[in-house]
Length: 319
Image (tube, rainbow, N blue to C red; front, side, top):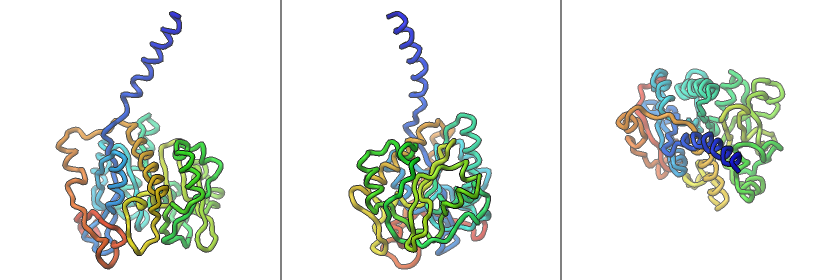
């Protein structure tokens, strides 16, 4: 009995510090990209912000022209980063350079025991692959614009960090119902994972899909050794985008699945204790300093988003 009591005390000593590391005020950095309408601005679709906020996080925007030094400094103040969908120029754009900075700092931090998650959606998913291979040639043309699909899970999916905690009925729905929204003309062929050792050793493929021409593309991944995740599909759109020009899934399972993914990533961000050095500095960087613009009722580009956040930029003056 005395031995049992000693073991219990020792276990308590070693488990309590882990619980104290849970961060109940997570902040996620979200990368902006130059507006295709007016390069005086970069933008973030408000659906990404709502999506993260729905899971208990706050957002710090990273405008396209933010300096490399400022981005590097902010890494120490935020608890995770999301690379959103859209379009960009590889290697030279502010979006890509910021993604690379966060990626490299996250690798270093995680190696040192500082848990820092990275998520890539659509363009962000492709960005993870371009960074890993240091080549835009990793991308292939696909015809998967404005289409919702059921995932074709690989054997690794059920034991993955990303999907192992999902309700079994939602997991089944993901593979049986068209509830993952795709809107991309590029993607990653599974063959890239056979010919590029840097991909095969870094990321685990969790699902694939076929485009309208029957070509297979990778649709969900997670890193083996780091809390890095990516989906070619858009979980943020299911609950927060309602354009009548797009075939967006809004079923109960579509929304519940999206909420699960949001909860998963934000919970990952709770596992580090990064924080701003002062409440004032934190307040200055939060997205609450900006007002979303209603674009859904207008014509032209960006109108497939209900709302966007705009950040003033100097034209052609990204980092």
